[in-house]
Image (cartoon, rainbow, N blue to C red; front, side):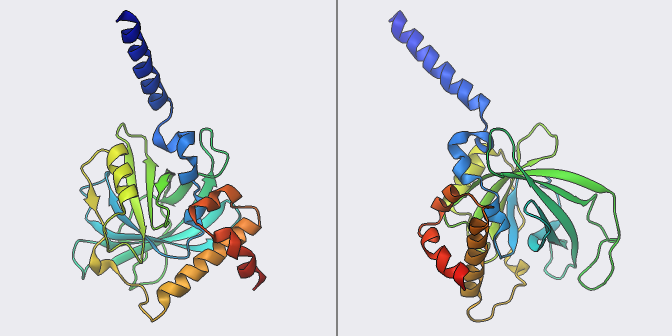
Length: 255
């Protein structure tokens, strides 16, 4: 009985130790879910669907569009948000720079340092005005914790120096109106304590709804990813998330 008890004790201790050593976003067992270039190479607006920090905010419809590649590790994004909970409330927008880097034992890029204005307020450019005001910069680190196989949802850990694990769920514009996909929802609730704030609403949609838009969008995303693979930016092993991608890349790049 003593031997059995000791065995169980060491089993539990080892399991606990491994969990403490590797949070989900740094666990080698989940590295295949954390290639941040899968997010960067999306040619689609990303919406913040839900988060568990700054839950008293009145801003809604927060979105991000990659507008320029500055280098293999630096990208410029345009962020938008509606200043208020009503559909008629004005939008503000500003540009940020995302710099990719690796954390922990990652051998591929899994995180981004975001350089952004210190706050969103009336001095920022509005969709109804022109011009931009320079504000003091702040830096926020976002680690990709997981994504689903369809690459329509992404769970990020936001590092801001607090004691609580702060997270955000991002979803593509073509899927944001639906529920958070099961895989992302499970990991989000498992790793990131509530309460949660839902930022996306049906009134947030301001993308083109032209016929064939989704098909063109998927093709553009795929081409960008193939080019990243071809240039050696995206590791070959990461393509396992997209079944059949490698087989058609050569045909797409040829054109």
